Length: 121
Image 1: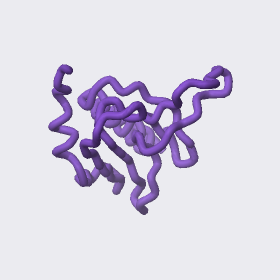
Image 2 (image 1 turned 90 degrees about the vertical axis):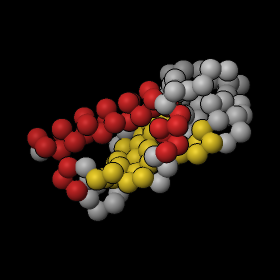
Image 3 (image 1 turned 180 degrees about the horizontal axis):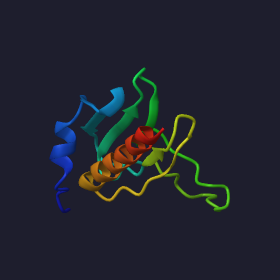
């Protein structure tokens, strides 16, 4: 199996908190686990963006399965564990995990987008 080039970077960021503009902050947790049907890439992760008072407002993780949108028929299919929470009350939408570098790029792209929106409010 080909080695994920961004894996070491993601794992090195475990338990790192990165301050952002306007008092917002990012927390990254990532560790290796045995590969399984639920986590085929062998990485448990939680990448979250928090508002100044600590509430999570966006995140990517694989802590639990998420139900796909109702318009799709998924009876008997395995539910995805990799997902994104787009806002505070979002229960999660499936996220297609490609590799650790892409996960970081997608996460920080969303962080940048949200912080740009905060600036314009």
